[in-house]
Image (cartoon, rainbow, N blue to C red; front, side, top):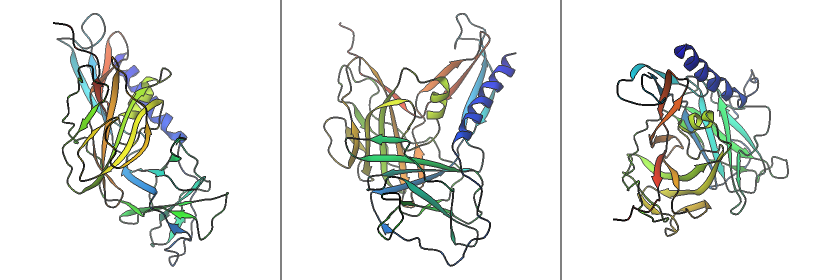
Amino acid sequence: MSTVRTAALIAAIALSALATGCAERITEVDASYTTPEGTADGSARLMLWADTPVPISTFSDVGNPPGPSDGDVLVGIEPLYRNGQGSVVSMLIDGSDANGFQMLRRAQNGGLEPLSDFVVQPTRKWVATQWESYRLIDRTPSGYSPASYIARGLVGGAITSASPLSNEAQVTRSTVPATLQFTANTATRGDSLIQLQWAPVTDAVGYWLHVYQFRSDATQDDRLDAAAPRPVFDGRVRDNLVAFVDSSVTSYRMGVSTTGIRLAYSPALIGRQYEVRITAVGANGELLAYTAGTTRTAIVSDETYIQFPSGAVTVDTSRPLSQ
């Protein structure tokens, strides 16, 4: 029973990801169409990565109450893909005047073609700073190597020579390793000015920093979704910090540091737990590494639970107990 229920849970998570995708392909592509109309805009930052599985460990629970305990038996480890092996996932974080984007990709002959027949709308808006995030998935890449994409913005619903163009982002790696090392303390001893610190990642040109708390309506599916690589998790969370710093920076203190670009900030509170995600980005817009994070447990039944790396380090701002 436990194996069936665990498999059903994983299958349900995978199916839920099908809500975001792309429409039918254009079959003939003009090989000479290699440069889209528009104007390069550095505030339209496109990032790509290959859909990377989250390892789901299933345990047979022999303890009481349900949950991890001595004697529990590891049944197996299964990779969970959010969108399907071979898919390319894109996230655009944009501070331009665009109010929607068209995603273009290079077809096998090198010409550009639309990835979808609809305008991509924001998945998150940071109203105070006028930045937005967009996300789209390509489940059947064209075969062009390396897989390459450009986002083009619409202003007032139209594409013109002034339409903001993102960088051309490329995917060259089959996975994004959860190897970025968070080196700051995870217990701040009553200090709400959370210190972020991490080991540098080879070939990184910068790092996305995201500090958040899950909202009360967040489900276990949301927590599994957050475990996968993404520069900013745009699900059911409250953002305390969304920022980008260049590769010379490997330390950032919330509420104090002013380096880089800050899209969102809300002070942390003492006595709370916060999720800290750090993601390294390469020169071609590809994600290079991210935090594996704290191991999370989900109870499947009285006899079974699963564990998985959360994708973010949990930082506790509780005061120390009095001596």
